[in-house]
Length: 404
Ligand SMILES: O=P(O)(O)OC[C@@]1(O)O[C@H](CO)[C@@H](O)[C@@H]1O
Ligand SMILES: [Mn+2]
Image 1: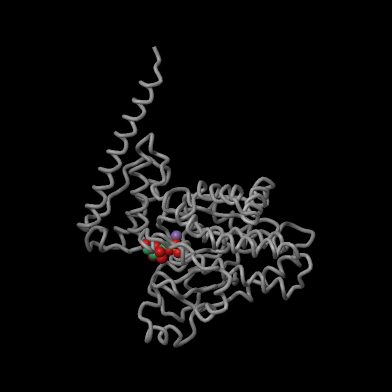
Image 2 (image 1 turned 90 degrees about the vertical axis):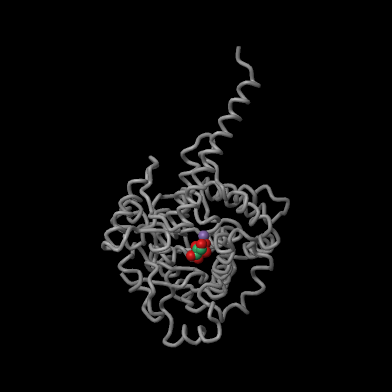
């Protein structure tokens, strides 16, 4: 006879066994990492495993007989991505916890702790929407610049950088913009504006103007990106916005489909008029198909973006349909520039190493030691007084590349 108690007990036991297996997998991973063991091929059957193993072979060839790729010897970008992929495997192979996101709680907490900043931003934005039709070009441009900066500085709220500690947005995101302008080392916002205005003029009765955001962190940063996306549609600078998130939990705070939908729902059901107005509009945009969410496994592979055309031609072809690609965050910047130790004055275009599906722009606060496109002496001057300038998250870039 079927008894619900027996069924629940069975499920509970299955869950406990799966947890034990996942914990033992994670302890093994920690031990390999701490003792600089060689990087091993992935043994799971997830769809990207073969690509990871090919990439390991590529790293082996690079090391040219100088030992196996290992945790302390191999490029940081590679082993860090590999670590997140192994954490994923620990859970994904163990039903019933195979869909569990170990970082979910931290992301939710970051969102709730940024509540006041979210309210301030949504309120500002809903006020702006009231008379957006009456704004002239100059005023629209000013508003775009503000929201781009909010989205840029929103990138400070990153949980892998703060090692899981609180990194929420506490102060009002709009008030401090003016005082932060000197910290934008490369500011190509004017170029973005020209591109958007010209795209709109050229496309008046032809195809849609499409804007893509390659998302980074959930929490306040995601809300700032959604507000920017809403502004682009509401101002008619764009007709559709495509978002690209991660298909597995990644770098602690990166946005997955679940985080994306959860965030829209949270705003919708918030006990604050302007927050919920935003959430309702955003849900409507998704339903109408003027906002589209995508994920692709390429974003959670270790490859530089310069190999996208070869490794993920379908994604590359999709990005080619865009009028402008906005890459959020530090990890995307590292992958755009191949995470090399470039001279600061090398051009962004050169560092992209032929990656150019469409005009693109990076909005990123500096949290790792790669930066290009600076003026001669600019980096050295900051370095002299602030040795931590490249990794503190205090500086940012709005860096654009249009050349084909
Ligand atoms: O891409 P994001 O969210 O802006 O930054 C992610 C990041 O903080 O994680 C790594 C540290 O773990 C850094 O290299 C990198 O800057
Ligand atoms: Mn991130």
